[in-house]
Image 1 (cartoon, each protein chain N blue to C red):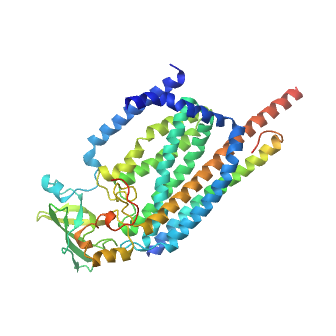
Image 2 (cartoon, rainbow over the protein chains, first blue to last red):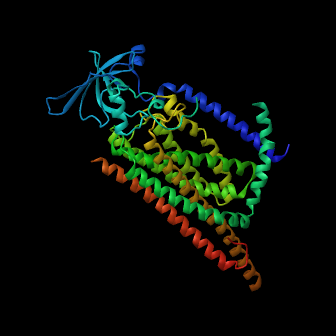
Image 3 (cartoon, each protein chain N blue to C red):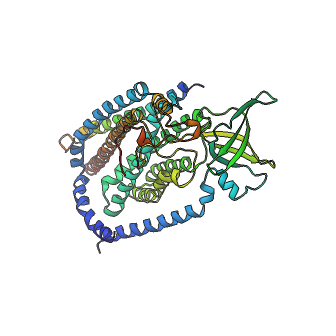
Length: 166
Length: 263
Length: 46
């Protein structure tokens, strides 16, 4: 075996070891790597009381009520859904630009004893859909899509880009 | 699979031999001189067109509005950060297995550029996140793994320069670069493996890109333009490093001659 | 802060960053080429 070949095999072996070690570590820490929990996660395993955590999902259509708190700050009550379960959220503060019904959100806060999630931070989550306003309007007019109900239809239906893959 | 693994060492050897032609610095400098001119010209044309297209001619997004234009610089930086790191890993393999001297110089000149590009990716992402998400930064899997990528670039740049013996520095840097390559699939797939605040991939979806062509095409143009410019900068730096090495050798030889003549 | 601020800041950072890279690379390349021509007028040079 030449020296070059030996170096190559050593490198391959190290790569294999490193790769499997990383895969095992990531699997072991799976729970800590998720940024937020969905309503279904919380139904399955109740979060510890008095511990802040992040709740994520879509803002349910027709659930948003904006108001003004006693201190003059804007308030918002809405429900977060992942399709299977729903959790009510209350928040006092300014909502991000992208916040709307049907949009993904990630909220940080604590579960109250009455079952309402009191958020102290609300972040909007952008989905992977990018389209000009005219295209979105055309889809809405044609009845293909109501943004308040959730994600846009599959891109193959509206994007004129050449299809790839299967 | 087995056959492929068996054939790869011998299959890689001819390629490596032909690449060794460029280990001769004079030959490399002559061969890359014309390539370099074309790279600068192509980069200026494509990037100029892409930036004008993205900044002025492309439509706004239906919900992000004008802020979508940040993507035309953010996404190319992200792709270059990852693609550049993959190139660093390839150079590191060539350095460790075939002791290719040009691969060492290339890696050394690449990492500061990669670090800057990754920093720009993080900064532009933050400038997009503040108005869109409502925060400059979160510790989700995507953002954190890109921050790790930035530290890997910085670490490589520092480590290769930390040794008196340049060859030793290159060797240690190559090992760091190859250990760090595990981070690349983590960056890429973090948005699929774990839920993150960062959105999943739009362009490399399996069915069709989730990005309308009026937004996608300027993005691809910008990405090509930035890649050409990145290539031109790294090539110019590598050429400069080859010449600087030759200069040091010549100066050393001259000093020895003068010393011998004086004695 | 309006969206113009964020867009301008992003493009400015990227252009400044790449501008610095290009200038530094061009300066280094030119300096090395000149010095090499001085030291080795007949040697193999680009």
